[in-house]
Length: 250
Image (cartoon, rainbow, N blue to C red; front, side, top):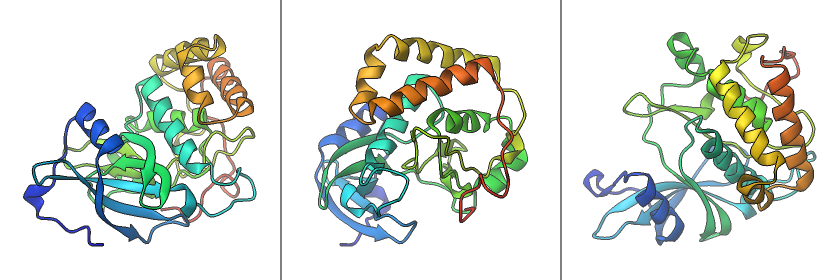
């Protein structure tokens, strides 16, 4: 199906409305994006009154098996990462939900109207200090696939972080292009946010229960251990540029 629509029919609603549309609106058209190893679709959602909202649909069935991650769990890891961004208040991740689609259950994420000429390697030239939140967040969620193309700059200049399927492994899996931060200290205000989240997770508060629906108990325990380690060692680890990098880089 075609994803083309007249621009005046495409809406970008505010957060709560966008979430409601993502959760319940009918997917009326879409097309596959030939990006990455897993199936990804740009789809149009019926937003009423002839309007449509665009979203990215990643069905569980379209995930290719990996030797080091449990089969068909990436969509839940993507959603768990979005939840973590909400718990911490950073970084900016498009609204993400888990729901049924034309190819079965998967994630549906708000589409960001972005500048295709921008990625980490262009953004870091002037916004390195701003991007530290992503470097720390990747350490928290144990992101095994932080490519340069996983940064989007929207039409207002806001930076978004996307593609978080390879996260929350119980073993250290950090692979990233963000080597500029190796050995540098993280801002105190961000570490304070991590301290608060660690307390909530250790007490098995609401956040713990929400995450337990998406990732395993072993992975939550590993997450708590990472948070405590970061609190005691609030700086980015020094990585191996020959091992701890994703491929391709963008």
